[in-house]
Image (tube, rainbow, N blue to C red; front, side, top):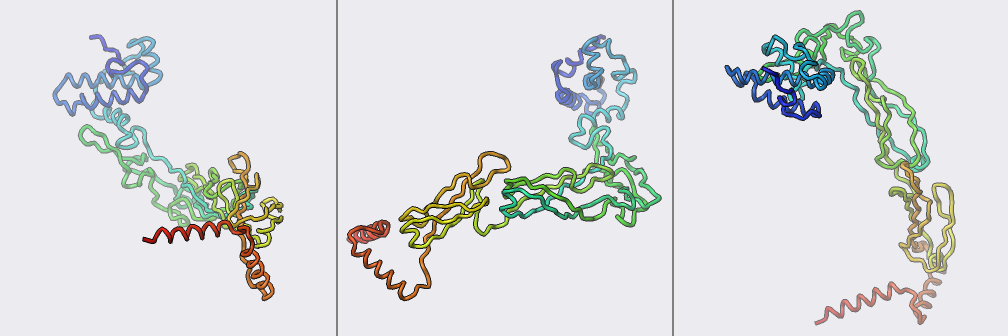
Length: 377
């Protein structure tokens, strides 16, 4: 009897991906597996047919030969061969490959040394260092390779032995019905080896606690919450596995004058009563030096003056931000008797004037007056 087309057997198109092939085979395996269909020769034949098709089409070389020459391009050894189904062992391998993403590592999983852990270091920066950039030296606690055992965990002169339970794979397989389940080896905890004579320095861990000194270059313009990644500066991995990374987390120290919001800087500028009323000029600090700020006459508390491009250039680029100066008119304190008399004279003069020198105060008083009049019944 002529063999059916392998793509037809699995019910997929000729351009099907490996994921599509796996999905199709999984569906057929669940349906026709002999454990689910005892004494059903038809189901067993369909399962064998699907298995052969899956094995050929998931092998790149065999699939290319099949696409070019058909069944003649793959000999009997490429498929199931004369051995047929071959018992639970063959099925366990192919089924473990297809369903390994659910129940474990699948075929050829073995034990893999774990990559080193990533570390985080919280770094406090002044506003000036964050804006202009700097280089800082940090000292971080970490795990390093044990010098006594060169990271093996075994006492000098000995070495770890292969775990007899899992054969060094770190995984053990359990057969439950037609499912092949894999789990971490309970004896070696997934490492694949057993240390019978552990190193006294690291107690069999292969790593010891230590400190590492690093120089970290801080780029100009970093802000609160930014992270600088130092590749390979985390903890070392197990058994020669790659180390983790170090993430330097930036935190901003409070500043005596400025507050930062993105690329903009903010500061409060107190001025005296005379400067607010008559106007004038004063020196305002920026991160690049002093600049002159012109105060117009009759400036009120809360007035904000914007100084273009006197803010921060972000680490991500773009134009610089602005410096926003908020005016606070300061009430004089510790007045002498003479100064108090002068203020009383000024107040009397303002009250006698026909012009309104306090428009906001008069507007507020008018509003209060109307409020109480509206309350009358």
